[in-house]
Length: 377
Image (tube, rainbow, N blue to C red; front, top):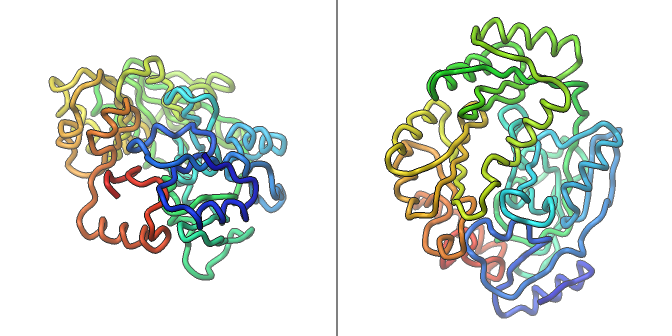
């Protein structure tokens, strides 16, 4: 195991490596993707706040800085990461909330993605070491930066296969004054989708739309109190379903649990899937799976995201066969299953070739997390 303390030491480790390296911060997301191989490259020393300018809405931290620490820091200035990165520790059985480098590497975002976008839409820059053993910096401490290629976005969702991050820069946003949740009863997946679609198409600036079977449709409204009160009541009238308004701490907990997929954290043995589809397809996917799997599910992103879990069994072909379009990621499973099934939906040939060219450019020796995203590569 190598555990460099400085960027210079990290560069030396990578430049002299002749066998694969498993990049890891604090290990909270080690169970995402295929089981990585290689010597452990521990990046946990790259932590701490490097630069925080609340008035400029800019935050730079070491890549191993925890999400929990960042959220505490931002809360002191009534600020937040608008893309609502999830804490997957309960779902994945991890001991910590995860790191900011991991948030970017996995391009994670929560229920507010349908309004604010994902991690890739909020990253401004990063410092890293490539598989060539070269230090590079990209982006800057400004929101408007159009010089050169947008490499921070390229790194989002790369799962540590392109570079070893040492620091990341994110833009932050003010927290809304209050939030409320409009909880509506519905009779079916299709009626739930119709309610969420109507809410999203309304002029009332919804920041979250989800459906949990047995609980109902959940619509979040945020902002200043007078506006939130008016918009919530207006939505209740437009949606015309039996409803209740949930406020303050109870509303916050609802969306934190949705963000972290807490509904599926009660058993570490069940397989969990994260399925992204066009919202109108969500009820059709569930209908196609009924009778084929014993599963639980919920919708987020107004139907664009399906969280699903089931008892362990061969299921990749069944689940992906139910999709007309979109992609399905095996988010949690035992090591044997993660190595025997395609964790990520296979890419079309042209996209796979482009992905490989990018990998070759940043990591020509194939050192970083080989096989993490595509087995054998």
